[in-house]
Structures are given as structure tokens and as C-alpha cells.
Length: 289
Image (cartoon, rainbow, N blue to C red):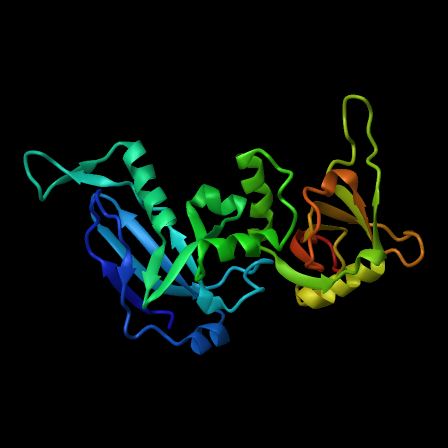
């Protein structure tokens, strides 16, 4: 399946308004889910090539992709897309279209959706890094169903700024290794340490040694094949984002203390504490359990 590739459209026209394709030999949903693969639609337009293709790639791990079967998802990439138009002197020769037209073409795809084998996929969301790389997720459901799914991850209704709301939803799509289930009664919010002009603990919470070791075991953190406990974890949990530093003297029964500055939205049902990154061991030092 690693070599699977089919050309869905061998020409891109500025006037395209429908993206409906049939792929007769597409692997079954059971095969995709078993191999943890997701369909990748690449929309390419450059001086050498103009095409829309489908391949299969390992699915990025995040809080959203673990919630549904992977065959319901599509990754769409516009990383190599700069719309080109036929020249007036020769229809077979193309020239770069205005940036506004390229953006309009992308908007039409994401608004209309993409149909593969009678299943239509609509815009679902993207992480903040995907926004920079010009890619996003689509999901096989109606727009209303997708909105309900996103709303089910947290309360975004009080966020009035469209850009800020997109950024907060993007936290759900941030690449992260699944960690452990953390019940709300084992964590608490604490105040930030700040002056009138500066927040010294912005985005920095505390994690107990017990939970840190559970994360190490779950995510298989090692250095030179030896397991070790990082001093800092970059995490995503419910509506929180930021880092947790190791604290050996947390109050009894408390596994995590989140700072007020770490909470970006509320009312999240998912209780999975996910690890985005962690501090590494210096090559000159030994790993310690």
C-alpha cells in the first residue's frame, strides 16, 4: 500500500467547481484502519505538473484522529499548489494566476467537499502547523454533523474572533502521542506567578513523578534504549496547552497542577493527556530511570 497512487485529475482548470472521483481499487475501510493509513489528496499545480492524486500515508496522531475510523478521514495538501492559467497566445502554455485566484480555488474545494466512491468529505479542521504547510483534514459527513463533532470536543461558543477560534480548534488537531487518561479530580488549576507587567509561569504547569513515569511507559520514552523520565512534557489536555515540569512534592492525590494561563477553552469531555514533545537527554549524560 505504500506505493499506492492514482491520478484523479490530470488537469486543473481555474473554473473547476466539482471534485468527484471513482477509485475502483481503493483499499477497503478495514484494511486502512488495520494499517493505520489515511487517504491523502494532493492538489498540485506548478510549471511542470498539474494534477490531483490520491495516495495512502500513515495517519498523524492527535486527539481527533483517534475518535473515529480512519477511513472516514482525508488529508488534503495544497503545499505545491499555485494556480496557473492558459496564456492568451497559446492555450497549451500556462502562466501563474493571481494569488487571489489560487486562494479562491482552494476555498471552492473546501466549501464543496471532495467525493470519493460516492462518499463526500467536508472540511473538518487543521492544526496550526498544518495551516503553515497548507494542509487540512476532511471528514465523511455532512457539514452539520462535522460542526456537532467539533463542538463536542469543547465549548468554543464564547470565542468571538474567527482567527482565535480556528487557532483554539487547531489544538485538537496538533500532532501528539496518546498518553494516559487523567481524571479531573486528580488535577487542579493554580494561579500564575506574575507581576503587573510579566507572567513568569505563562503556559507552565506541574506534573507529579508518578504520572510522569506513567507517561514514559505509555509513550515509550527512551534514550539509547534506556527508559528515562523527562523533566518537562509539552502536553495537550482537554482545553489546556503548554508544558508540565516535574514536581516531586505535589499535594497528596494530585497528579497535575495547571496554570490559569494554560486553559484556552472549557467543557471538554475527552480526558486523554497527550504528549506533544518532551525534554531530551544530553548525549554527554546517562539516562536515568
